[in-house]
Image 1 (cartoon, rainbow, N blue to C red):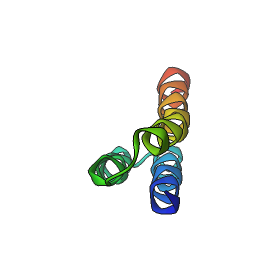
Image 2 (cartoon, rainbow, N blue to C red):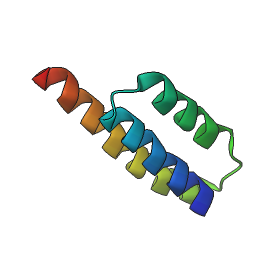
Image 3 (cartoon, one colour):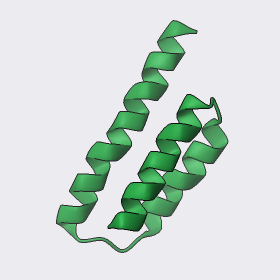
Length: 61
C-alpha cells in the first residue's frame, strides 16, 4: 500500500511539473500492483488528486 501511495504522489508531482508521460507511467505502475479492493479504492482517491490538478492546469493554461 505504501508503494501505491508513493507512486500516486509521484504521479501528482509529475503532473505539477507538466510531465504527463511520467505521470502516466506512475499511474500505470499503480494499476499493475496487486492491491485489495479496499487499498485500490484508497489509492484511487489519491490518484484523483493528480487528475484534478491536471484538469485545473489545463483550464488555467
